[in-house]
Amino acid sequence: MIEVKDLYKEFNGTSVLKGVSTTFEKGKTNMIIGQSGSGKTVFLKCLLGLHTPESGIISFDGRNHTELNIKQRRQLRKEIGMVFQGGALYDSLTVEENVMFPLKMFSDTSKSEMLDRVNTVLKRVNLVDANNKFPAEISGGMQKRVAIARAIVMNPKYLFCDEPNSGLDPNTATVIDNLIQEITKEYQIITVINSHDMNSVMEIGEKIIFLKNGVKAWEGTNQEIFKTENEAIVNFVYSSNLFRKVREAHLNENK
Amino acid sequence: MMLKQVFRKPQKWSVFREMLFREIEDLGLKSLGIIAFISFFVGGVVAIQTALNVDSPFIPKYLIGFATKRSMILEFAPTFMCVILAGKVGSYISSSIGTMRVTEQIDALEVMGINSLNYLVLPKVIATLFFYPLLILLAMFLGIAGGFAAGTLTDLFFSEDYIYGIQLDFDPYFIKYALTKTLVFAFVIATIPAYHGYYVKGGSLEVGRASTQAVVWTSVVIILLNYFLTQMLLG
Figure 1 (cartoon, chains in turn purple, green):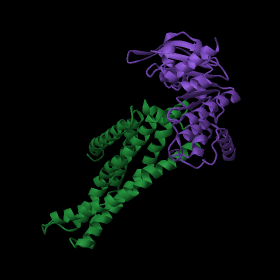
Figure 2 (figure 1 turned 90 degrees about the horizontal axis):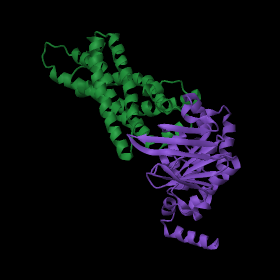
Figure 3 (figure 1 turned 135 degrees about the vertical axis):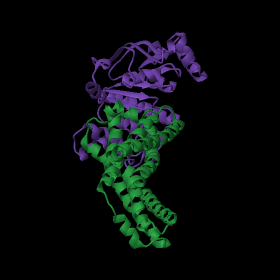
Figure 4 (figure 1 turned 180 degrees about the vertical axis):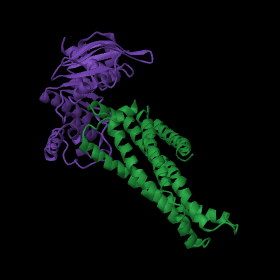
């Protein structure tokens, strides 16, 4: 379990996170939502250790991230898989080399074993026959799949995704969502997704945290989001006509 | 702070070795052509300029070869070529690392638990320290050869005089002095652009700005260090 308690973070005197507390459980797809500038990315980067919070506790299965030394932090990071918004694939490496990269850095297995593992995860993300292509030669959806494959190649305990659907068409976005959810269940990992895409939130968000101005304004499941009267989340989620109609239909069905 | 992270033990030697060979190719071998071209023609121009300015019958013609050799070994090869490398390689280093920063590739390395400064910068430093002295020795040789070719083609001086001039009063310390300067400049060429690229914030525009700043600062530092090193080593 990842436990976050009273997390505070500021930049140049401006508070970005103001006492955020929550927990993320194993085998669940957790989503962080909120308007641009609400502190979602900073929150995710604090969890990843890319930002150091001013105060608060981030505990990964009992290991307080902020109290670990550099060596222990590096060890913890080996248990973390991350899918960046733009994929963050290494341009000079092929798809195969990108996915193999963490294995080359951290495992002592033979090249053929590494290759087997790479092919297994590439098959798992439905990406075959792209091993020797460079990131610039494949589509955005395929790049996201490579990023997911690279994130899970070391069998991580924790998977973080920053806007995994940005820039993708609705069909590909659904495929990526389902893939992330399947992987979360299959490998029993803790997945935390930072997203703007309400479609994803409704589809796979088993636990949703809504941040507003650096404060946790709401927390619940994708089913509870239909029933909530919390003004902040209602204004955010139902700012779109489509979702307003979906909500009305859902409420009418359950009357 | 940055250098402390850079000079840590590589996390995996096999990966470091692979990166080192890649950097030797990118930062060294790929600069061979431009260095060979410029040094050959600069050597030629130095020889012609000297020949045209030495018109007194009391000044022996072998001084043309002597002057070309001295200028190539002492200044043109180590300093001039390193300023050119600062432009070519410096912009490459800062823009490639800067692009990795803005596209979150460096964050991806850090999240994986990799010391990104050590992984990205150390192979560059070692590659330049190892390869640039060889490149500068080649530049010295080609510069002197360029002077010889210029003389032969223009008939401004006799090749025998030139050969006598380049053999005259040869002091191996000057080669040591030039290679010492080259090692210092090689370190500067690898680290200053890496710093500018690594700490860039923003997007492609900022990467471009960082690249320009890196080249300017690297050149300024090379010129200043050249002054101090010359004072220290020859003064």
